[in-house]
Length: 258
Ligand code: ADP
Image (cartoon, rainbow, N blue to C red; front, side, top):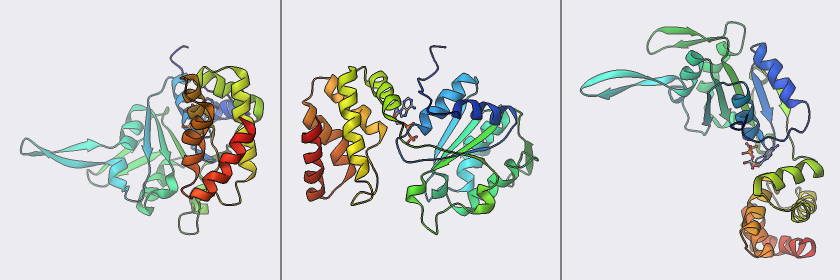
């Protein structure tokens, strides 16, 4: 059990993931950055004893980056499987992080894998792979970033079981920060109260809010002996905004809470 990454559940997500895996259903996770999506999938992959292939999607990501390509070596061309193909063959979990960033041709590749055919046609080699029963496709995106061009098409979205993640409640987040940074409870609670004060401001000037990840960073610096106020500036406030006035205004909140 000890090599299963720590994950503090927030709801019924562990149970739902298990049912999706057992029934060969693809899964979509929506939620803001740094709220535990990646950790959750790492935890579930280890628990279900499946290898995990993670791909951080970006706007240059092509279908070939997922499926594979011909390479040249020793004067010969050979085929190299991409992460999606490897996962399909091995019965692994393939996690596409920020899937809406990927080019449209990549979603075309996903479609036959997300219905009951569960196949991956590889155009370049003429192979049609049938996914191993233990293969699972998991995708995530941050609805906060969405714009009209980048939003997921309803026809794609409707191929997935969906779950929504958000920042945890105070008690859960305290446990996470304490556990991740090995810090005392009082400091963890102070940081979480600071995060809540900052999250209320989210809709004003900030694109993103203080994530659990940033709280873990701040707690880690404090645990390491760094000044708490400076730790909050470096780990929480500066990552949130480039605007100096905004940073100074947010530092006032830090000084009031820490
Ligand atoms: P996301 O994939 O949503 O951007 P991550 O899963 O990478 O976020 O989480 C960022 C960090 O926050 C993790 O490395 C971990 O330290 C911490 N974390 C967030 N939520 C949890 C949780 N529920 N259980 C354990 N750690 C968590």
